[in-house]
Length: 248
Image (tube, rainbow, N blue to C red):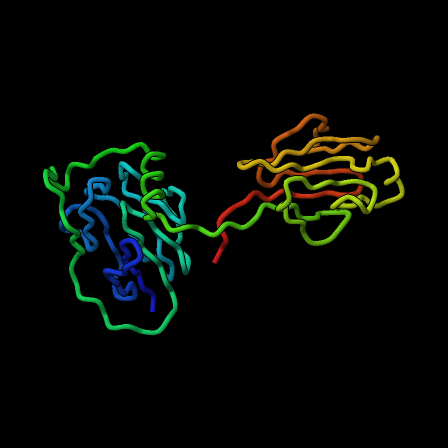
């Protein structure tokens, strides 16, 4: 059974069986399947469509955006465990689990606020302010993060997580990542270092004749790494992967 749970804070207040629904419309207008009466929700906010064996989430030009796993989206294919945030409500998409009774038809009506101008009027909020408001109130669920890492394309196997404040790359075993090969003695000890800040990772050359390159460009001073950048130091070739949500 494919289900959609509607949660407010930590409480499930509604459940939809998507096996029996081709379209699930969401917004403040009372004619939607899921009605969320909240100033930050647009009259026509989003829709979930069944296309073959897939379910597609589409934002219908809402003013404050539709969030999937903490990121704004215009359109996305839903996967098991995905978290959709609209206003202060969280929708949990589940494509497995034990069967449950078919939920009653009709929309969800949350309590209105005094002075509500109606579903055709939406309070516009700056996206960052809106996200911060929801995060501070605990209404955006915490999205688990996968650590940034470098994966070996040559000169090694597997990957190295960039959890430390500084990861060194060089010719000796004192370094976190060791450069091998016949000319490894030309590399410094270390030859390069990847440093971690609260937001980003930077690579810089340190010592030795072999200089690090990022996407073919020689690096001396600190250079900010971007997702999927290619790092080459001697025979070692690495690909950088930035921190991101853990896939279910």
